[in-house]
Length: 94
Image (cartoon, rainbow, N blue to C red):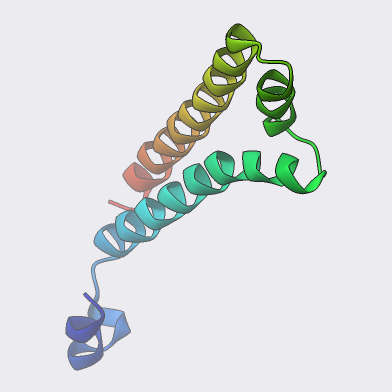
């Protein structure tokens, strides 16, 4: 995409394609941030990872599963919100 834009100039790039690619990258990064934020509990910073770590420390499997499900649901919610924003804002640029 960027090679084509450089040869034609940025004013000739299709804004809908550019916006969609940027939103896809943003969605991917946001979901990865949510998923890896659970690692913060390993260094004592808290967050949803604290639930999982506490479950590991007490050998409480339901607590570990509940923490993992919370992280997964939060990641899916972030994805859904950004997909909705992509659709809402993407249609305006058409």
